Image: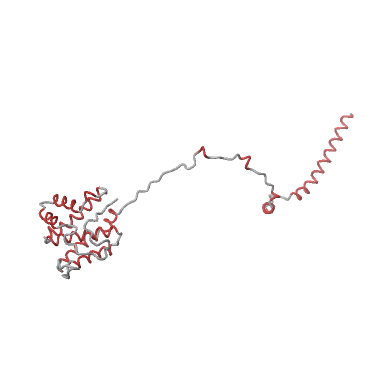
Length: 245
C-alpha cells in the first residue's frame, strides 16, 4: 500500500544530503494559486492535487490525515506569518520531505528533527550554489518552534497511522484426507514381549516386588504342585472306596 508520495523528493534517495527545495514539491504556479485561494476548501483542494493525495492507494483516513498535515503547514506560513511565495513554497517542501523520508525510512524523532534542521540551515545561508539565504534568524526560530509543537510532538501518532500494515490470513489445509489415511490393524502390529527377554525391565520390576524371575517362580511353585498332587491322590482314594461300598 503506497501511503506517501515521492513528489518533491530531490535528494536522489540520500536524505542525509538534502538540496535546495525552492519551487520543487510546490511549483511557483501552485504557490501563487495557494496564495490566491479564498478559503480553506479551495486550499485543501489545491493541496490534495499538488501532493497527489487523490491518487493515494490508501485508506481514506490516512489521506485525510496527510491533507490535514499540509493544511496546517500552509495555514502557518500563509495566514499566521504571511510569508513570501518563495518562503511558502520552500517551507511546504521542507515539511513534505521531512515527513516522507522520516516515515518511509522508520527514522526516530531525533533523526527526523536533524533532517528538518539541516534543511532549514541550507535555506538560511547565502552560499550559492549549495545554500540560499531565504530564511532569517527570526524565521528559523519561528519555524523550528512550529515544527516542535506540531509534527515533532505528534510524530509517534503519524508514524502509527501512516506505517504500512500487513494483513495476516490463516487458513486450515487438510493435507491428509480421510481416504488417504491408513491405520494398520492392531493385531498385526502387536508382538508379545516376555519380561525375561528384557533384563533391565525384569530387574526393575523385581526390585519393586512386581516380578520374579522364571526360575525362582518355578521353584516357589514346586511345593504347591506337589501338595496339589497329594491332594488329588487322596481324593482319588476316597472316590474308589466309595465306589466299592
